[in-house]
Image: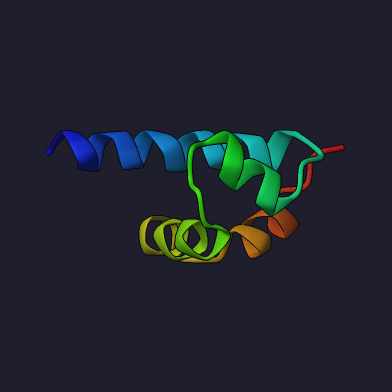
Length: 62
């Protein structure tokens, strides 16, 4: 249960970083604590429904 909550928090933080900052998906995955970009992408897609790259593209903020 605690692991699930932590993962959700990490994904929410990743969403913020992808939308608000000019960071790469690799940088965001590392900043939120994933050691593997592929695992990050899999978890992100499970919770959000799209890949981190697609999310970043759809939520670019100038």
